[in-house]
Image (cartoon, rainbow, N blue to C red; front, side, top):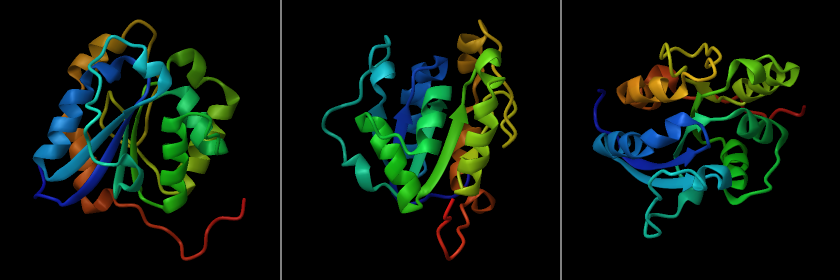
Amino acid sequence: MTGAVTGSCTLVVCAAPLAHRWPDIAAALSAVGYTVSVVLTDNASGWDIPKPSPHQPDPRRADTWVIAPLTFNSTAKMALGIADTYAHGLLCEAVGTRAQVVAVPMINEDLFGHPALAEHVRRLRERGLTFVDPQSGTDVFEPVLSGTGLDLAEDFDVDVLVRAVTAPSWAMRWSSEPSTD
């Protein structure tokens, strides 16, 4: 693990198997010095996972955002600026405020083949988002084979994600002018 950090981090949890590990992710981010808020998407709220405390710091002005897991649906909404739920509105604001955003995509092989996904990922990368593959820990992510998500979530190395968030080489770099596309 890298040295201690200070600042706030909002963890957004989407509805994919890694959602079961959000308490581990939040604890690991807290352990390196972040004050962590957790927001579940509406779909994740319906899962049988722990619910975040209603008594937590305001998630809207975080220095750092972690999306774990990131689904196909939330990828599309962020890339297109669709803020139709509280969680998705926060994600769109995170992109707009140019905060650091690190995402762990969990997208199955069928959705991974959808032609819009590559464009959405390209657009988000251009805006500085960092992706961490839940299988390899690299920034090049692969589809998750249907039926393997729970095993993958169980084996996920939370420390790899924390290093991606805290390591300077993963920090976002923004141009001085916002994109006009």
